[in-house]
Length: 476
Image (cartoon, helix red, strand yellow):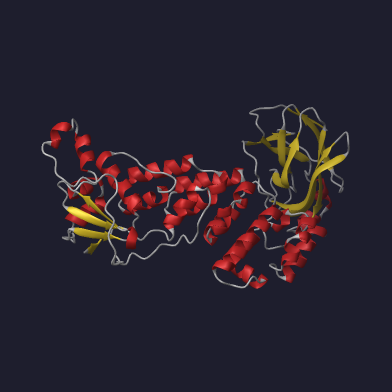
């Protein structure tokens, strides 16, 4: 017997994954199994399913009015067949008849298998890495253009369509998965999309995770993903979840990975299995209370890192930390900005007091940051505190101690809140910025004229929430 080629082996536990998909769960171990020949064990081979015709029918052609009907009749039919496939392994193996011409006409892989320079001459071909149901779905498509897939078979059918280069069936499988994509199976499908090199499906999975991050990470499939997929998600700026909850989910993943690798659940082993993923947690976005209650006591961070992060939360100027402090913006919509001044022709002195803009809106929006001016005398680093205050109640809704670097131009520079701030219509708010020079790059910025640099707050950066336009009234 010959062994069929035309691609690498299937993802391990692929049949289990398909079953899990049907129940909105997930499997893991998304590695690729070896394509070495696997002999069928000595056991009765199950007859092929799907209504196999054994006895030839005289003049059957006359009962079929189209080419499609005639070829569909030959599907899974011994009549005129010139090749047979032993599909699957062990007791699950099935003998399936086929017709070389039909297969070669629909697949370049089958064409090479039967007509290429190293074409097989065997009448029976083993396919131990293919599931019988998926292979029958492939043949049905090649014979009749009919698509028969379901939650239990879509993954294995996608693998088989990839293996035998039938892109039209691949597309059908991806569309099926897209239609059934939900937050509770997004991570499992993301792993499969990356494994099968389906960027469109992967992008849709990531969008679903962005929109429902909390539900997605709480699903069973989250802890089954591989490290590369975990890192791809943690790198995103668009996750809709607080960083302390994201850290808790990552710790759950580390626990599961230690179990898979049969490692004791120690802090050192968790740190080891997380690798690069740990550096993608944005600890500076947490409050000091959230950091103290979670990461600081987890044992996963080195003592030196814990101390540096506590200093980052509590002192100014803030020490450098090796973690991203860029906020994750979880809102949907188009970012826009409102400028207080269309152009600036003069400047005023700055003595360490706050610059403020009072404003109100007629639609609900979310403010994500301010645009600030810096020195016009060369590159300068600033330490800055920004706030959004509800004016009538003197209630601080959001604050962030951060920094920015200006390049000596008249441009404004983005300074962002840790999380978007919801702004309600017909309520008076105050945007406040207090700047302090952190480390001037040159001596010129130290002179008296430096104090007169344009430091006024000029822009509000915002995301529209459910609205396409609004009016923003600014007052001094």
